[in-house]
Image 1: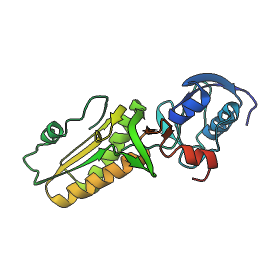
Image 2: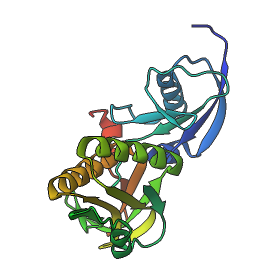
Image 3: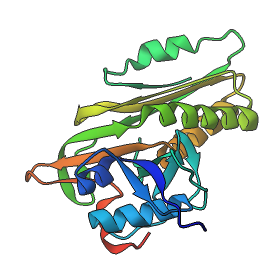
Image 4: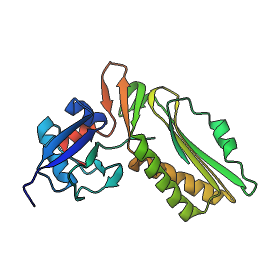
Amino acid sequence: MSDMKKTITVRYFAMFREHAGLAKETLSLDVATARDVFEQTRLRHGSGEPNGHCKVAINDEMADWSSAVKDGDTVLLFPPVAGG
Amino acid sequence: MIEVTVDTIDSESLKRSLANSGAGGFCSFEGWVRDLNDGRTVKRLEYEAYEPLVLSEGQRVLDEARQRFAFLEARCVHRTGLLEIGDLAVWVGVASAHRDEAFKACRYIIDELKVRLPIWKKEHYVDGDSGWVNCERCAAHGDH
């Protein structure tokens, strides 16, 4: 992929928000997919290992980890859910 | 219809809202806050939801259930905020012509909601500790 950086707003929820110490931040990242965003922010905040039960959304639509992200996107990182 | 609320859930009025002259059966599920989880005594629970996606993904679940089980009416309400032991955390109700569709749809809806909606639950224990359900252990070990 291109090495051009993208401006991505990342939103953290529940445990991820507590690990990051913030609910939202806008970053300049060299990323192609939602997975790249997850990995880079995980390294940035020293969070635990990722796991298959985490979910991601892009611009308020549920997405896959392989979904492409583009400049200006908002990526929402969801730790394992526990409704009910 | 799916809703998120910080207010007490009134299951009786929800049930009445599903009244339908073609309905021969009604089935509901209520999720209550219990005082024990994984061997630890729970004092209270804290629910967090990302409402825009709870509503859109929840409606998707209800639409899928309607296609599969052809019920007449269905509704779901999930609470957020601090809940005490015994509080009603989630309510699902389905009215249908016959009982089989109501039972099956109700089961399908609650099962899917629990694994798909962006809702998180933090347990506050009597010893003063707290933890996010489904999060702490797997995040620490990457084993899920």
